[in-house]
Length: 82
Image (tube, rainbow, N blue to C red; front, side):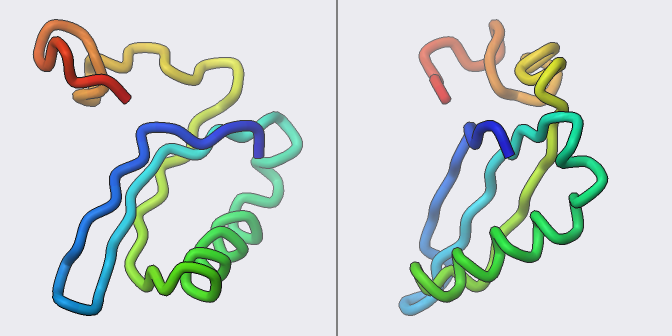
């Protein structure tokens, strides 16, 4: 795993938080994507009590490319930085 960005954290219920983020993997990470995903989700649950998480994976060579297509920049949300 090389980077994590575009992180959103919110309260779903009184005692339940949720998180979604983009995880950037290098070439070696793609062969281990399921293990990496399971480890991230376990750490979020065990260390921070976050039981609901959505992870989007990006290749390190293409991270942030066309971010405006995914609502992560561009003219749709000027001033909405991630």
